Length: 83
Ligand SMILES: [Zn+2]
Image 1: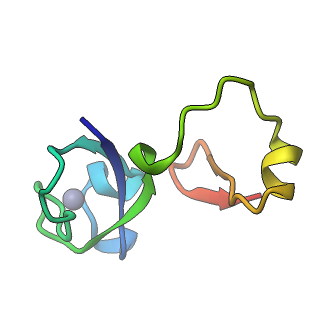
Image 2: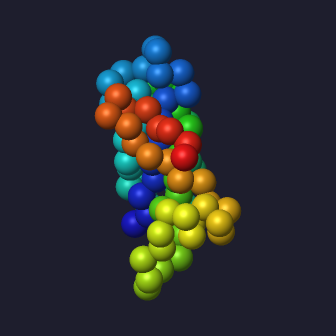
């Protein structure tokens, strides 16, 4: 099953779960989640892990950036920083 990552659109008013972001497994064919299941606030999808082909070689961060990937690093305060 694909795993999707969601994060609150408005972290100030979100519950602790979606403020930090959460992963959710959903069966294929289900519509994307638009609201946090806990606090019902709007959430946005971060990464679609399923759509990324499995890589046999480890890709370095700089290679990924060169290839046009956006790398998100989860910081300790729970927000995502674009590198
Ligand atoms: Zn929430």
